[in-house]
Amino acid sequence: MTEHHLAQVNIGRIVAPLDSPELADFVAQQPEINALADRSPGFVWRMVDDGGADATGLRPDGNDALLLINCSVWESVEALRNFTYHSDHLRVLSRRREWFRRMAEAHQAMWWIPAGHRPTVAEAMERVALLREHGPGPEAFTFRDPYPAPAPAVRL
Image (cartoon, rainbow, N blue to C red; front, side, top):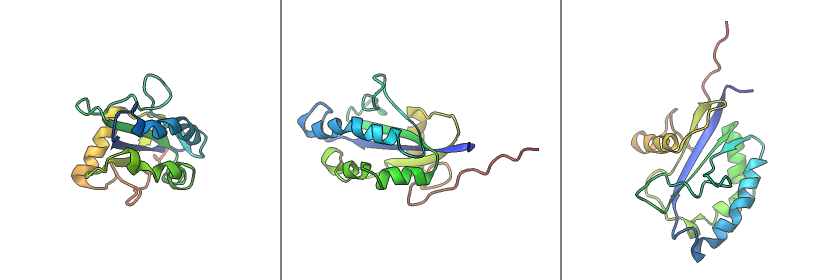
């Protein structure tokens, strides 16, 4: 077992409420894509709302009812990259402009966490803010500028 896992967050502003016709296809595909993540190599955990199926009921900004959050934990950058770009997830990702508004600021971040830790909404939003304020670094980075996991602790 590794000492660190990779946490990822992405946020997005939907083009209409989740129960609107514009989002019907997105909502319909959520169970399939979440199940795909759950069984993907290297998957560890994903954030869910009180309903337990997905995170679409969470609102990371109480002033923005259309802002959604997705947060998950993976064994490695490679495992997350394989799920994101080399699975059926890519089919849904390629349609994101139908369902989400283009965001001018950073809307995705990754960071290393101790194995077993589960990020909160507040923690995930802090990582997006760090990336926006300081650019990529070991505390918040992207696929384009990944940082390695912290070195294992030396045991004496």
